[in-house]
Image 1 (cartoon, one colour):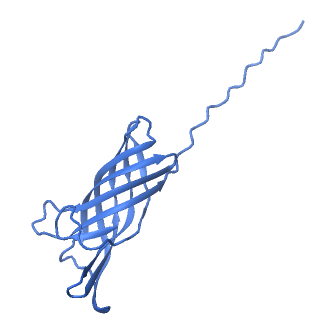
Image 2 (cartoon, rainbow, N blue to C red; image 1 turned 180 degrees about the horizontal axis):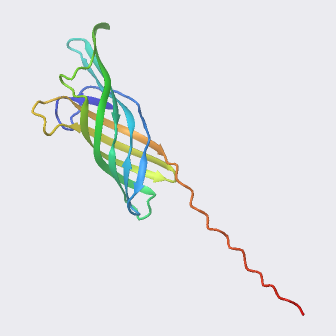
Image 3 (spheres, helix red, strand yellow; image 1 turned 180 degrees about the vertical axis):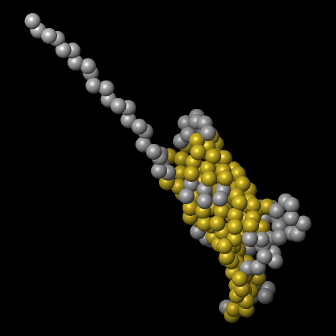
Length: 187
């Protein structure tokens, strides 16, 4: 669920725009309760804004590739159960369109330019999740940031539900030691 705001941090604008999040997650264990996750993924973002006064609707659709770098901290001593996650998310805009309609008639249908939205973006993310066996569910919020940009640009705000199935390596089985047989020579 996403929206685009005018440079404000965590400010919702318009109606929710739903999109797809798909990718892969690599979990690097740092301790019993902490791990670093690298998650290359595709993320569908954008916004949907309606103006009742002008009877207009603006649909912005954005397609990003992102690489979240997230620190995951388990609340329990056992890595299963509740966890918190937070980190930085570099992203790159693959493509995007903006479509404006008035009374159902299309006024504008154009590709996104770099005028108000850069191709590269950095976001901050914060999440809360639950892990049980190989399954993991996390509700994560993400907001793009431009702290060093002199121009106020549009920001992406996203709330996502991440469902992950982890392929964990099987523990190596200890080699079974056969009991030594005593051989006695009979005389």
